[in-house]
Structure formats: C-alpha cells, structure tokens
Length: 275
Image 1 (cartoon, rainbow, N blue to C red):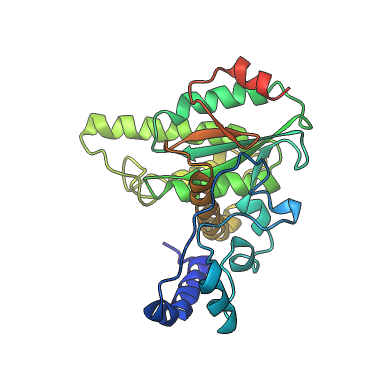
Image 2 (cartoon, rainbow, N blue to C red):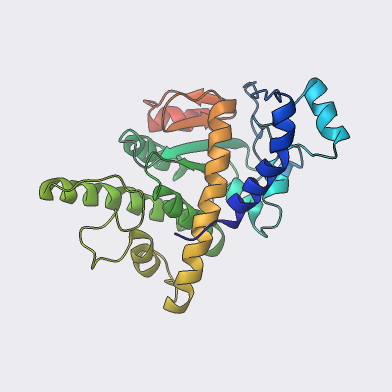
C-alpha cells in the first residue's frame, strides 16, 4: 500500500513533540459539542475543532518552545484540494441553507438503510437547500480508499458521487455474501481482501472503469489510486474529530445542522428538517 505523505508529516510532528511530552503531560482537551453547524467547514475561514489542542500552561510552554498547535489546516496545507478532502460535498452548494453530515462506516450494516434515507431526501431538494457532506470511517481499512474515490468524484465527476457511493455499498455487500458462501469471509483491510479471487480487479479499479462517465483512462488509474488513499485518510482524520465533537456513539450516523439525529429517521422526516 502506498505510504501517505500526510501521515509521514504527522509522524514528524509527533517526533518533534515527543521530548516535550517526556518532561510534562500535555493537556489534550477534547472539544465539546455545542450544536453548532459548520464547525468543520473549512470554507468559513474559522479554525476547526480539534481534540488534539493543548491549553493553559501547556499551551504557553509549547509556544515558548516555538511549537505550534496541531490542525488539519496546517498538516494538510501542502495538498491543493485539502479542503475538499476534509469536507467533501456530495451534493449541494457550499453555502446551502442546511448542513447534513453523513458519517459512514462501510462495514456497518446500519449504514445501508441510513444512506437510502439520505438519498431519498436529498434527491428531492434543490442544491441551494442543503449540502450533504461525507465523513468516512471504517472498521475495515480498505473503505478509506473507496471513500477517497468519492471525494475525487465530487470534484472531477460532478453529480456522480452519490451514485458511485450507492454502487460501492452494494458491491461491498455482494462480495461479502459471495465470500460467506465460499466460507472465506474476511475483513476488507486491503484491496485484495475485497475480491473473490486473485484474478479479480480491486473494487476501486472496477469503479474507475464502470461507475463514471467518462471512465478514468487506464494511464491515470495508478496515480488516482495513490490520490484516493491519501484523500481518504484526510477525511478519516476529520471523521474521527467529527464523531468526538458531536459525541456520535454509533459507527455511522447523521448530523443535521449541528445535531445528531436518530438513525431510524424517515426520508420524509429528514426532508422536513431541511425545509
């Protein structure tokens, strides 16, 4: 698997901070949910919440030593599309009236009915009414790449990201079911876990050839595979922060205008919240 430059940067930052942590315990204060929408929207120009910030005397010591607070904005600033990776809008405009955050764990069976509810509600709304933002996490690591492809599609294949995401969830389940029938089901922790035989193409490459119009040229697919891994990891980083901030306790969930809603919400009830 291609090593992420993003995580290399994070490791360097940790190594710089390690000597300080040997002298004192840095007080990491988790951000507390306050019901605010747009808290993780980088387009507002405001600092986004982080559970990794240090405060009080620890912050003064860090500043005196020439250190800086950790943030996704500084860690990922070298990436030209980092804002889209940290806050990928699947549908809607960035300044739409309502904000819908969809926290997705592809390994979570409950994500399927929730996604169908979200699609049913969003498909009937004008783009200026609500924006749907993806925050992908997963107990099975290959989902990171698949989420990264959705992020790429938001920019490079406008209007196709939601259809792609529906395809991914269905194909994920189809492969799992076929593996169970063969008695060889396993976690999808790399691209060749998510196939039925070693002759099959990995799921992301199948999608590049079949899910998008125009499809991804073969000469560009390897480079795109590297991109989606890194973009997916940046989104995963933010998904973790979102779950802490809003105190989301389930693997997948929905946050509407800064408030966690019940996963059993109907499409009509969700649409009513977005009027």
